[in-house]
Image 1: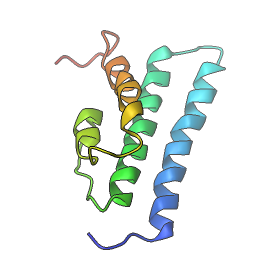
Image 2: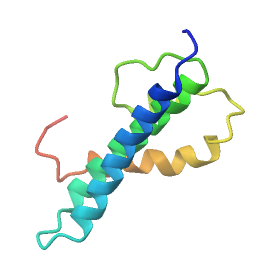
Image 3: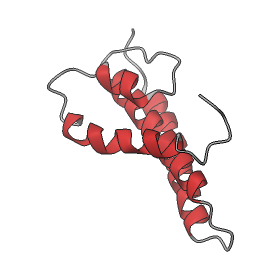
Image 4: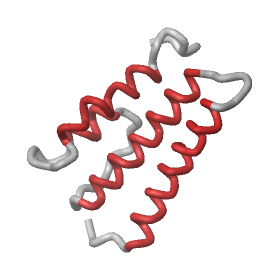
Length: 102
């Protein structure tokens, strides 16, 4: 993987912040929907993990699975202590509220 440009980092970060903004909108909406908060938290986490992979020189695979993405980070990456918290978003997003079976 070639060295990414600052624009690539900025684009991934901007996309993650878009999801964080959606979390704020959903939390403060009259028709609050917890599953949408969980969805956007998972999406923001996914984008940030992919950004970290790119920064580490690893091409992120096409997956939405936070565990797979976090497992690709080097064993001594400073973010790893937070990964357990990040993975909680995936469990929330695939809770019983999901209309998709499996």
